[in-house]
Length: 287
Image (cartoon, rainbow, N blue to C red; front, side):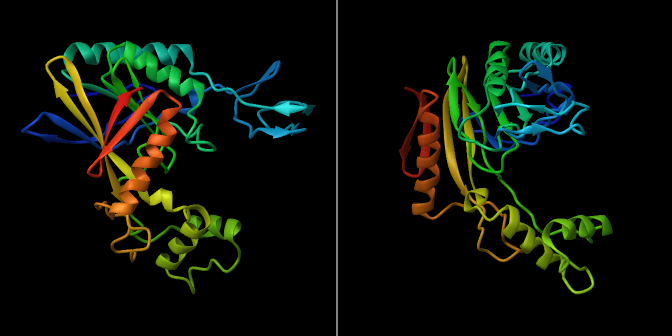
């Protein structure tokens, strides 16, 4: 098992290994892709920050120093910096030479607006990582499920969802209350509101989607020649549970488990990937 560390990938998954069948469970992915190596570009001009696509949009002068320009349509295409890509792929090759199993993880929010359709640069980067020797690639960032695909028999997960979610924590700093008040309104007041009540308001505002609390755990079965099987297990984080139990992964009710796996199968079909569902467990294969 290898931990890839580079300018693009900054941390590793949490793992649990089964002694009986050499299965590796991808329990959570915590990784990081730095903004330095993502270059959004506009028609005929380059920006250093991303823009939200819009029709008849005007680019403000304050945005990355660009003078006001008018476009009939504005879109953003992200590219990974060539130097950063080269260092990452070298790290993958080296890891493959020193480990039996190599998993690359990337944290990226560039596909948050449409998690079911991962951006082209992520798909290209994942394929390059597989080509350099990675046995699996897992993308984190969006708090919901994304599709999965197999590249030369090796899995790429474009969003496993959240495995653990905790709304419990220590005292929140003053700036957090102040910034939240700016967004949600002046009734956000630490003198009258508890932290649990603040968290509830934040969840209502940004995480009301029940799919934020539904995920999959990926299981990789490793054989002598590499990946023998890829299975996914549905996870429910208990959105409706009290704060003390919400966010703790659990086996979903059968109906919820079926919804999770069917959603993954539907999203993955467009990438030439099927999810065979048997007894509440999905097995990923190419179509």
